[in-house]
Length: 125
Image (cartoon, one colour):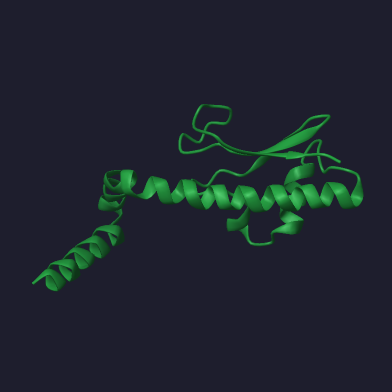
C-alpha cells in the first residue's frame, strides 16, 4: 500500500512540474525541503572554486580581478554554464583584498551582500 501511495505521489508531482501554471506553486511549496540541498550544493561549489582560485593565484602570482576578470576566469576554468552559477541561478563573485579573498554566492534572496549570502574565504600567498 505504501509503495502505491509513493508511486501516486511521484506521478502527481511529475504532472504538476510539467504544467507551467502549477510548477511555480509546487516549487514554492517545496522550497523548505529543497533549500538545505541548494545550500549544500552551493557550499561545495564555493569550496571548489575557492581552492582553484587559490591555486591560480599561487601559481601565477596574479589574481583575475578588475572589470570582468573573475568572470573571464570562471568562463575559462569551468566551461559548463551551470558551473558558474549557484543553486539559485546567480553567478559567483569574488572580492580580493591585500591578504586574501572571498568567493561569494548571493544566496536564496538573489541579492548580493545580504545576511543569507554563502561565502568561502581564502588566503593570498
